[in-house]
Length: 146
Image (cartoon, rainbow, N blue to C red; front, side):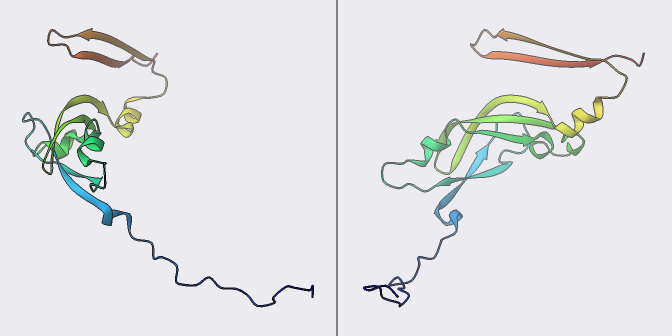
C-alpha cells in the first residue's frame, strides 16, 4: 500500500435527492377548438407551472395540436383517419383558444390507398385569400392498373 492513502471507502454525506416525477411541476390546460366542431374541448395539454420570469402562456402560444376528426365531431368515428391541426392563438385562465392550422390524413390510410401497379400523381397549389391567410392544397391521385 502506498504511503498517505486511506484504505477506507469514503461515502458522501447525506442521502441522494429523490427524483420527483416530471408531471408534478405541470399544469393542465383545456384545448378549445373552433365552434365548427361538435366537441369544444377534445383534449388537454400539459405546461410547466409559472416559475420566476417564465409565464406558461408564452410557451403555450403557437403550440400546434394534431387531433383526429373522430375526436372532434360526435358520431364521426369512420372519419378518424383525418387529422385536423389546430394552433394555440390565445390563453385565458386554463383555456387555450385555437385556430385551424391544417388538415392531413393518417399514414395507415395513405398506405391503403397506394397499390402496386398503379401510378401515383401528386400536385400542390398555393394561394392567398382576401383576408390574408395562406392556403396550400395538396392532392393525390391514382391511375387504373395498366
